[in-house]
Length: 99
Image (cartoon, rainbow, N blue to C red; front, top):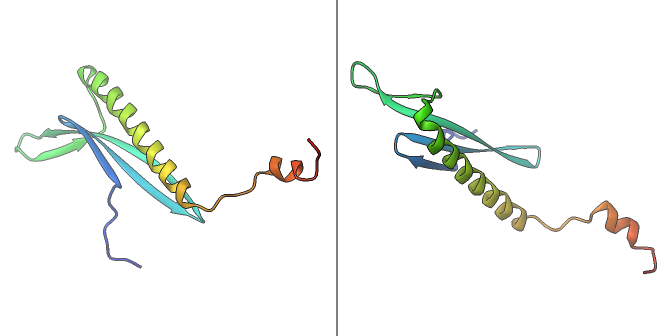
C-alpha cells in the first residue's frame, strides 16, 4: 500500500470554478471521472468548496466541462497508444475469408 494521498491527474480552472480529473484503475481497466467545484469564502473568511453553482456560473461551467471532456479524451488516447494492439472479433472472423 502506498502512503501517497490520492490526487487528481489534472485540475482545470476558470476563476473560482475548477474541474478535478480523477483516474481510477481496476482489473486492467482505467476510467476517468470529473468533479466540478466552486470555491468561496465563508463568514469567517475560510476558503471552502461546494458543488452548488449559481446561474451566472453555468456558462463558465459548461466551457469547463467541454475542456474536461477534451482532456479526458486525450488521456484515454495516450493510454491506448501505450497498450499493445488487440485483435478485434471482426478481424478474427475475416482472417479465413477470401476478399
